[in-house]
Length: 129
Image: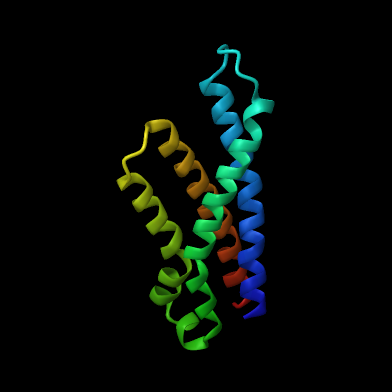
């Protein structure tokens, strides 16, 4: 269980970093030429992305049940426990009444978390083979 918790924490950290960078790139492309300084908006973007990643992290905590060998050995249960939190976040984010710019930032955050989470899933299953 310690390995799974450490893996989830690493996923959270890498996802926060990647999400902040991707969100800043998106913001810079969206507002280029407008004259708004990225330095002024960076703390706000970082804070928002960090909170979104915390939400996804909490929603991904059922992956800790994979410490039980019965759950880990069943592929369908393993996939559901590991990825359901992030997928539910994406579905919920698209069902919310948000402006398109915020939905895009939610999507960037969720996709970066899913990509990092998938890399760690691959490494975890590769180790146990």
